[in-house]
Length: 114
Image 1 (cartoon, rainbow, N blue to C red):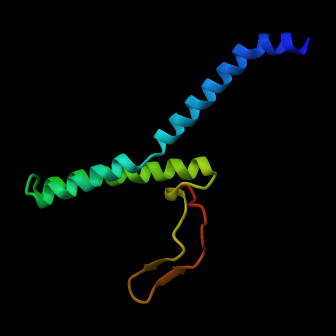
Image 2 (image 1 turned 60 degrees about the horizontal axis):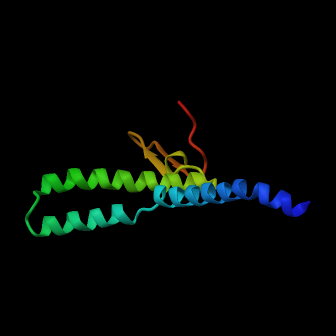
Image 3 (image 1 turned 90 degrees about the vertical axis):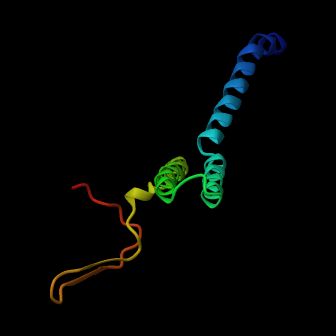
């Protein structure tokens, strides 16, 4: 009886394996920052070789760094950690006119929506 059950469920188990493998590969590609870092290195080499101007370099570098930040935020979300944008830095300060100084020493406090 168990042999028949195993034979009948074999295609379903096989499909589960395929879907789990596909999900794992997709997750790895979704959070892989190596190709983006390679693009940044190539951009730096193009700047040194004179193929791009400083202005073009700054614009392309900003786009690549945004991509890297987004990948990092995806990794943080998958790990259950708040996004980088949602957490304040350990130390923040404001200097107002005159002697008005404000210093916040709280670590990891979530930002409040305005």
